[in-house]
Image 1 (tube, rainbow, N blue to C red):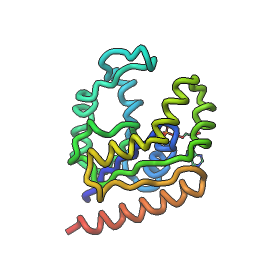
Image 2: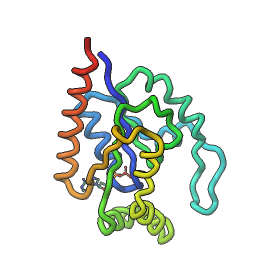
Image 3: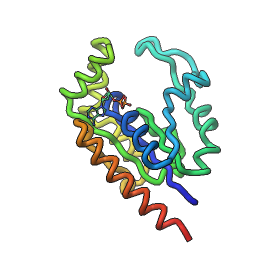
Length: 172
Ligand code: DAT
């Protein structure tokens, strides 16, 4: 059976991991957290002193994922989306959270003042939505609200329906 690949993107803290894991357990699709994958495989290319974090080796991440992406049925979670091959994804969801809610979530994570400000600004300027629109066909890019538990439930219901329809459309 053919299964679609789904990209979940958006500013850190918008709820990609929460949605991705729940969606995977309810759909049977595989969940891949690119941040974790990079950490486990040390897929880094230097260190960013200003942001105090390792720099992702994008080419190695793509190589690492290529086989399972071509098999299909993968949910990818990352706060960036311009370096994945466009052909990988059948649909792209950009999660969106109100600034004050996002601020509190990131504060709870213990982010420092600069990281908090940068990430909230990233959300305000819709950086990931722009990046998704620049990287994928407009008609496959969708924004989803991610403020409260009911949003999570609605998003899951909607995506499960989409998967079901996609599978029907691609079975012969
Ligand atoms: P991300 O993977 O985008 O960094 P996350 O899934 O770790 O985000 O979520 C960040 C925090 O927000 C976490 O404490 C769970 C909470 N959260 C996620 N989605 C939510 C929602 N729809 N309603 C309320 N809280 C949510």
